[in-house]
Length: 266
Image 1: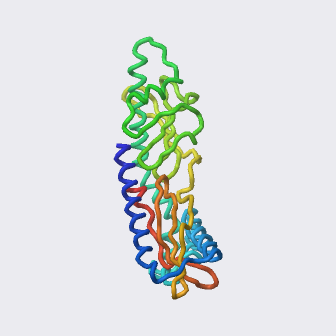
Image 2 (image 1 turned 180 degrees about the horizontal axis):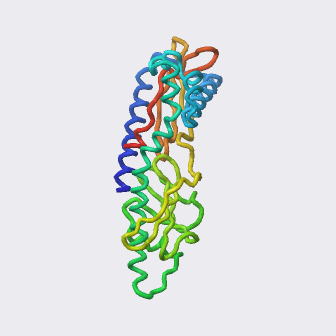
Image 3 (image 1 turned 135 degrees about the horizontal axis):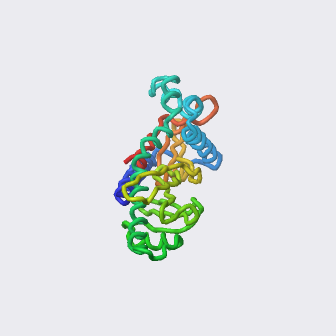
């Protein structure tokens, strides 16, 4: 289950990156490389764009990050702001059931290891849970033991899951897992047969939903706009976007907005 989710996310990211870079190349003949000042302006513009989006500041996004034309295409300032206010929160809400299913699959890996090595009255040291879980790990899943949630990571199809030896015992397991939206979750469950008592919470140790935003290249267009290729991380997936930035009210603004949900909700 985990491997298939990661695989779909990575494939979506590669398609998006290829499309973005190809589109930029098709316009290169009509543009000139942007200078250092324009590169800085483009970086500030995309930082403002994704900062407002990630923080759910819909009014700021619609009035300072996108052009008037893009805002009107979204139904005007009121509809645009309402849509963007809960944009990232909505993505994370929709992605949570899949993340919980992933955590359950990880729980079974640890549980299977414990069942195999702790039959009867055999000693069952918590420090070995991660090692035993590796014997039952799905392809692409690596196990570690520790109490720091930041030990958990997901990059493309590769998952590093963590067993917390302080919070775990033969009766109760606590795991850390970085969900596709970037959050590092802590899942705790009872190991009693037939019991699903437990909880899943955000440890607030993960990266922002949109992070590592960098302008890779920018070109000044004959009409005064700037076309920029931007690399970023959406949740746990690296990807790329192409932006056309236009001058409006003294700042650069994107002339459209990108739905960056495919790598998280695929």
